[in-house]
Length: 180
Image (cartoon, rainbow, N blue to C red; front, side):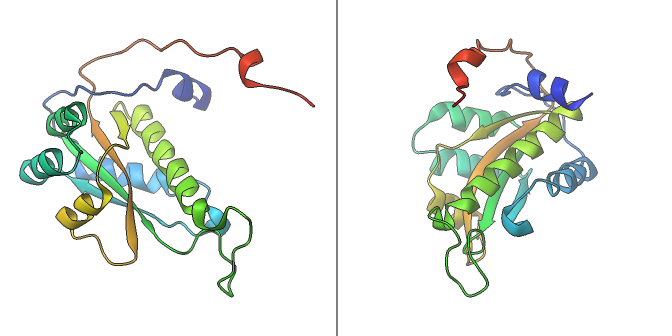
């Protein structure tokens, strides 16, 4: 599939087939996502693939702030990918000062690019994903024993799609673009 088709046909998938995703395929997705651009090539995004139902259930039951839709997605996905950020590297100069007024917010920008690249690679491989942002970062970090110096960025449900949603309506180019 070409890049434009991949971008235009990828959808957020919230229902998955009861079918495992091979470990080598997950490794391929992460390898592809490693090519996402990051601040000065810092590559601070890390990926944790959770296939253990007990861990997924614990995250779904304890960490999604009562957002039952996310809990159901997590429990129904064969894999939950948790992305983390190695905190304190993006946006800095070698002397520790910030390069721009965005300060360390570049790390979240980088993690978003990496998450989207991962999701596009998954779509190209015939897998579905949905990026979830409603969760308690500290609780997820505790459940997964995230190393010190890393922060949780996102959770991505991953699996073979059980649905094929239509594209939602898009804003027009005239609404999105202006020239000066």
